[in-house]
Length: 448
Image (tube, rainbow, N blue to C red; front, side, top):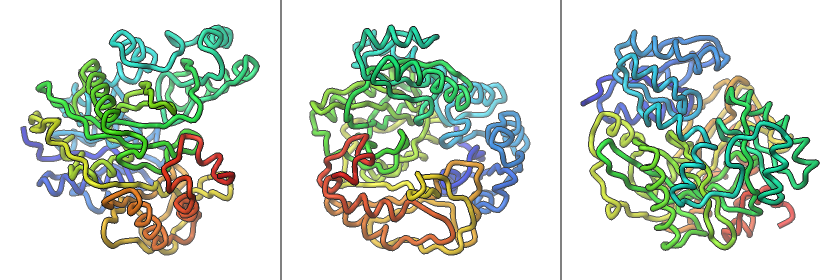
């Protein structure tokens, strides 16, 4: 099968990212947009554009009926969901199928199985994949949470069963903490994912967050593309990613990659996906979750493998064989990504909407910038604060750090607060430069 037209069911930099690959493949594109995005670059760059509703995402980008109607009305063969919004919606994937439209991602059944984190744990426990000790199923009451915590030992962490990204997560170091956190976490999970269910895990102190990128086709072929280090986080939201990881050696990489592919096969996973793990200080690893979509941080993997992951997504969805063996995947050099957010580090990282009065983009050797902003671009308060991803590639980590520092110095955005200057401080930090990091690094950075 060859796609003639793909509708991109997203906005911002990821919509542009998909449109660019489609253009290189000779595939026509359809952008969808809300009232807030009518002047966006994705609308300008796409071959067609369809208005799907007001600024509120639940009335536009999360409106399945409007997106499906746009795809049908424009004759799109397929829909690429990007990340966020409908990308991990089993019902949307099924709606695409029911309307004769290819969903560029895993099947609705796979999304549903992977998205139920409690059920996913049970599947992998039976397979012998290491998982963090925790509750066997979702937890219905605070008292049940306390019983589970007594079994695994404090500290523990509550997590949303129906989604990730830090929503619905709370750490508890005592019974009193847990009783207080339960209702808050459940309410947050319900608001974010429409599912208030929680599960509980043993909390690992100072872990590394490592994820493995996999590709799988419809013919049973799988490869992994190495690991990404995602330990630099704020409130469970990733801010800096790199590939490979300073912490992962060749033996551990092989173990993680093998586990990731076994997990993918267990879920009958096709297309691009990410298997996320936590690693303790002794390099023991534990499965966290499946991200059934392309990741925000996919560029760092592309930079060290030379592969266009979005192109692979499209090819796999079109029924093509992967055409790769694991021996073909060679990791070259070092890549880093800084998520440039319209938020104010001096004000507890609060969002900073407003008009960008001017912008100077960085460039030069080994610099990649995925962004949708420009002079006079209006950052609205309706969506995620991500306005760009600054990525660099260099032969080794030392040079990658220096290149990122140089690129950050060149990057200027005026009119709103951004995280650019904050990242400059991180890249000046000796502990960061030495690779001595964990998921709590940013909380402790001023004391390092």
